Length: 255
Image (cartoon, rainbow, N blue to C red; front, side):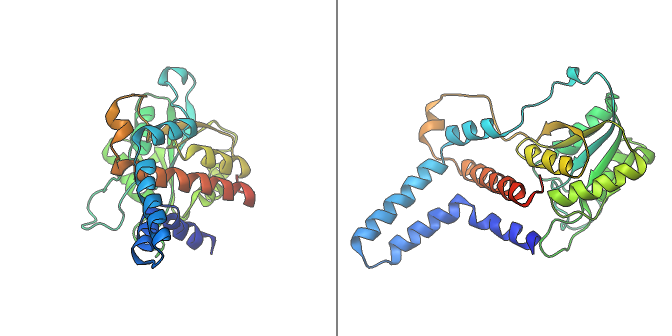
């Protein structure tokens, strides 16, 4: 039930849903005052949530900053990579179809090639609500093998469907195969706060390594202030969903 609710909540937290709701109400209400009011609210939300500067500032406060590679002086025994970065339903199934967030795995590969991690644990099964689609962990493991990573250095966890299960099932594997070692948790910068909390609750002490940044360096150009951006809507949806997820996980004692 929690898995289903977490997926359906995503749509309710999309600002575009709020805009459409306001405009539809304005279109069909018979009250002229309410029509003008909700039309103004809808247009106002377009400019608010379409503002690229505002969402960039909000994400800069939420994302965990990047770790300079030079600061990793002692190799980690295991890099834990969380999935959610491929299209596992796309056909034909003879390749990996990456979506946004692919540098979760490419950064882990980079760390491995630099000798800063010795093993890579990929955690994640199918996160689809229907349960269909292949295991992302297996797909990403095949990608690593194509990149020259020996099979002995890749471990997969294929049962988890969300961040809490990532932590619980990965903890079982780590205790069984790599107990009391140094772990590096690799996930998106906006997601690392919640993921790190879940792994702590599961008894895994891991350092964080941010990837998949949604932010850019601050710019004060007029176009970012004045012209609504469709990309800003998507980033607001991402941030609101993650902040809500973090609050719910905190309330449930998951992180």
